[in-house]
Amino acid sequence: YQPDLSMTALSDCLPCPAGKACEFKAIASLATDLPDCAAGFFCISGATSRYPYTLSAGEYGPCPVGHWCDVGTSVPTPCVAGFFSNQERAISIDYCLACPPGFMCEVDGLAEPTGPVSIGVRTLDAILEN
Image (cartoon, rainbow, N blue to C red; front, side, top):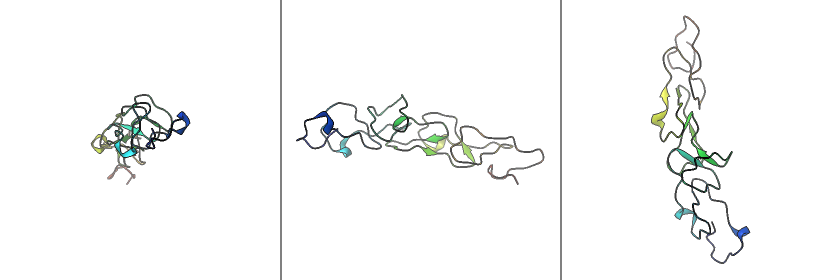
């Protein structure tokens, strides 16, 4: 895309900005006018669709397991410790599930609980063995 109409060369084009999608070639508009990346996807830079089903490492793709992505997400938000999500393309924090009894979810961004905990040990917060 290129908001400056005086630019004419392909090399003058700018990469699509974070959280946005450049779905058409030769877009002459402000970054704020570009469509947002859809919920369930992340767009760091250069997204050619608001639904980037194909992962481009470090640039855009489906929201990974252990994370969730709202509309216009540039960097996926991890589920916090004590929660996990095995759902790819999660659209809200509601997809982050509480760690089940007897298992641990000690770090952010887990796709599944770890564990089970040691025999005879309780986890009151699913983060630390108590």
